[in-house]
Length: 79
Image 1 (tube, one colour):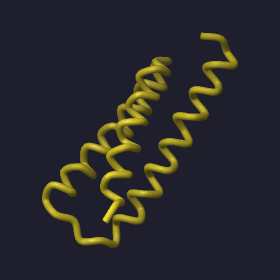
Image 2 (tube, helix red, strand yellow):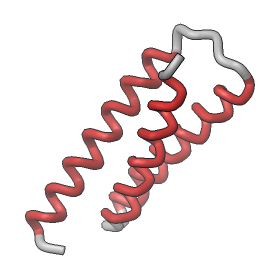
Image 3 (cartoon, rainbow, N blue to C red):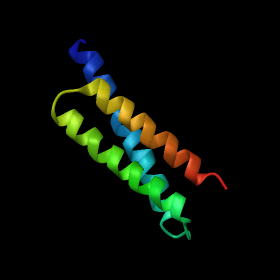
Image 4 (tube, helix red, strand yellow):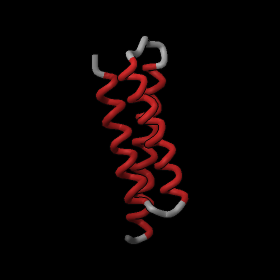
């Protein structure tokens, strides 16, 4: 992966994390079921793993985990 590709992937990963975090903030005022709370916990776990993978230089893994967290947060945000 070139430096340009790595920078682009890191930027995309960071955007996914930002939108996921924004989705979680919107959910904070809502009463969540036990399953939804478990999903929020999983999303936060994925987000932490993204940071760990990024710090280790594993950009592919970081991106894939960010996508998973984003998809889960999208699913929760839908009524």
